Image 1 (cartoon, rainbow, N blue to C red):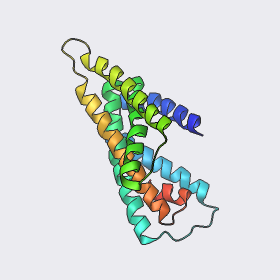
Image 2 (image 1 turned 180 degrees about the vertical axis):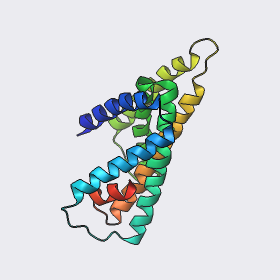
Image 3 (image 1 turned 135 degrees about the vertical axis):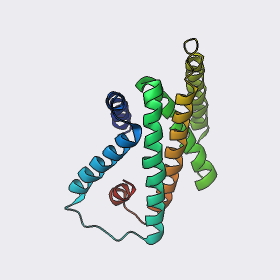
Image 4 (image 1 turned 120 degrees about the vertical axis):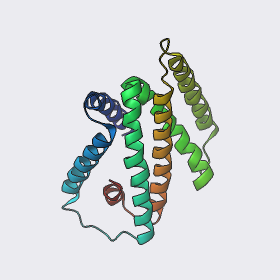
Length: 180
C-alpha cells in the first residue's frame, strides 16, 4: 500500500505539472477535490453510513480545509515553480514532519531506527534542496521551496487532526469523504 501510494503521488505530480502549465493552482485544487469527492461518493454509495460525532466532524472539516484545500493549492504552486521531481522529493519531508507532530501532539514514540531514518531523510532532502536553491544564475527557486514546505506543513498537521477525528469514532472511508 505504501509503495502504491508513493507511485500514485509520483504519477499524479507529473500529470498535475502538465495541467498546471495551463490551469491556476486554485482551479486544479477545486477540480481535483470535486472529482475525487464525486468518485469516492459513488464507491461508498452502497455502504451504510454511520453518524459522525460532531467533534469528529469539526476535526475532519478542519483537516480537509487545511490539508486538501490549502495544502494541495500550495503543492500545485510549488509544482509550477520547481517541477515534479523536486516537489515529490520535498514532500518526503511531510512524512518526517508528521512523525514529529505525532510525537509532540499524540505522544507516539518511534524506535531508534525510525529516528535514524528521519535523520537520513531530512539530511538527504536538505542537501538536494540546498543545491536546487543555488539554481541558475539570477533565478531563485526559494519561492517554490517555500510553497512546498508550506504544503508539507499543511498536509502534516491535517494528518494529525484527521487521526484525532478517527480516534473520536469516524471510519476511514467516511472520514476521507468528509475531508474532501
